[in-house]
Amino acid sequence: MTARVGVVTFPGSLDDADAARAVTRAGGEPVPLWHGERDLHGVDAVILPGGFSYGDYLRCGAIARFAPVMSALVPAARAGLPVLGICNGFQILCEAHLLPGALTRNAGLRFISRDVRLRIETARTPWTSGYTAGQQIVVPLKSGEGAYAADPGTLAELEAAGQVVARYIEINPNGSAADIAGICSDSGSVVGLMPHPEHAVDELTGPGSDGLGFFASVISVLAGA
Image (tube, rainbow, N blue to C red; front, side, top):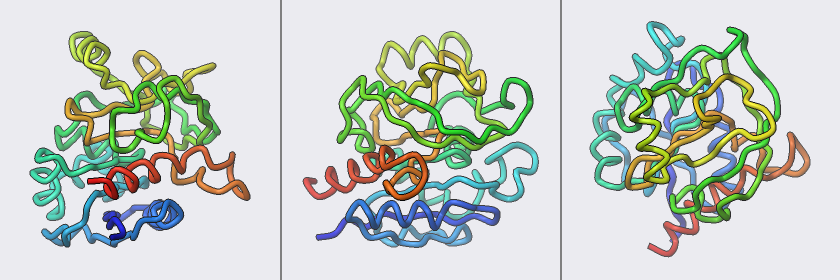
């Protein structure tokens, strides 16, 4: 049975269609989820896509955290539903306290749009199981508030528990603490990633297809569940 992956659209989402396309290319069925609904429609996993939810007023993700759809998503995520937050979606996951820390203004206070090289630090999450720990990939980054920040104790806990999912290598483009590009919950089911794997799923466009593994990983895990 084809895995059904929900893709949430908030006012201001930009990359929901790209995320849905990535799910399709990975062999799954994308299911549109509207921010104003309190129903996940029985999906097997959820993606919170990139963009500028609610215009990024207050703080990035601060209003989206209270969207009706989050009233269903938060308890489902805590119960083990695989959730991937990309860029603005990562910010929303932190605002919803599904992931620790916060995303702050980039070092230099400039919006960054460039391809970045990442090292996958763990393959124990549903979203990275198709990679190997230490594997290097190239995906696009496009954000103005993408610098991951957390207190020293939280950073130490993330490192000790193996919750750093991906790390910038060669260059830290935005000043993220410990070169962190993505983290996961202690269970591994919830992943936040600042770069955009959905823009690297096709050899004909972008930097290649290195990002497809995030979507193929969860489809494979769900197929075997």
